[in-house]
Length: 121
Image 1 (tube, rainbow, N blue to C red):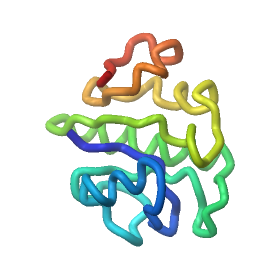
Image 2 (cartoon, rainbow, N blue to C red):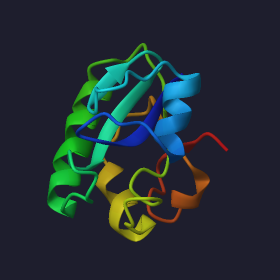
Image 3 (tube, helix red, strand yellow):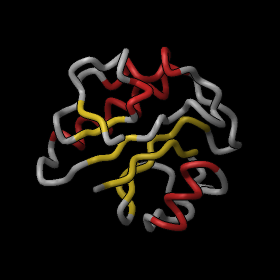
Image 4 (cartoon, one colour):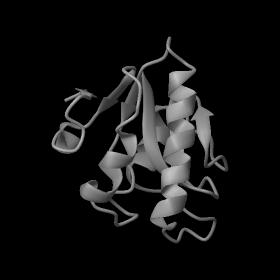
C-alpha cells in the first residue's frame, strides 16, 4: 500500500506524516511531489515551508487522483494531508478527494465528508 502524505515543494520531510514517509516508506529527501518509494507526496506547503493556498493544494490533490486512477494495481493509504502542520481543517481538505478511485483508502476521521469512500482504520 502506498502511503500518501502532505509534503512541501522543497521535499524537506522533517516532521509529521512526511517524516514517517521518509523513515518508513522510502520517501525521497528533496522530492516534494509524487511517487517516491512506497509513498506519494501531495504538497500542502511551498519551498519556504509556508502553507500553500487551498486552490493550489486542490490542484495537487487532483493530480494525485489522476495518478491513482491510472494506477489500478496500486492501493493508496491517504493520511489527513494538510490537516496537521499546514493548518487546514478536514472540512476544507477531505471534500477535495470525493472523486478519488476505489483504490484510495482514507482515515475514518474524514468519513462524514467522503460517504462513499473506503477507510483504512
